[in-house]
Image (tube, rainbow, N blue to C red):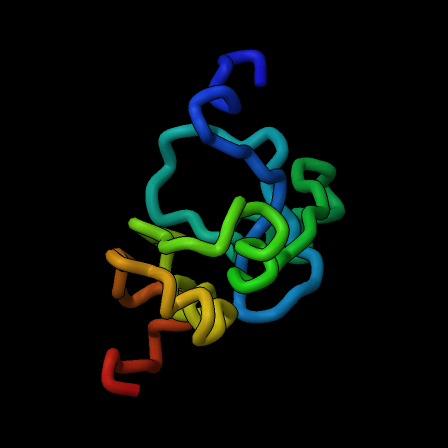
Length: 121
């Protein structure tokens, strides 16, 4: 809010999005500028005890849209880039949310849950 983005339509939510609800651990004092560091590498179970990660709520994309997106009109653009877990985010979207999306962009790579999947799966 201190930057005024909330007045421009931006909403920052301290949390994570995946295919199932729950808790996740995100870095609270991570180094910036590190590419290809997913949650598994940044806050594995040992890191939680190291006190540099904090628990946040995990929402499905369907629940996130319901709680944080105003209105029920089209979602003009949905861009997902979560280091190999993009498919998990989409699995949590549900047909109603995906039906509202006019343009969808996501990353497909060797990391995360994409490792053993093909796009046609």
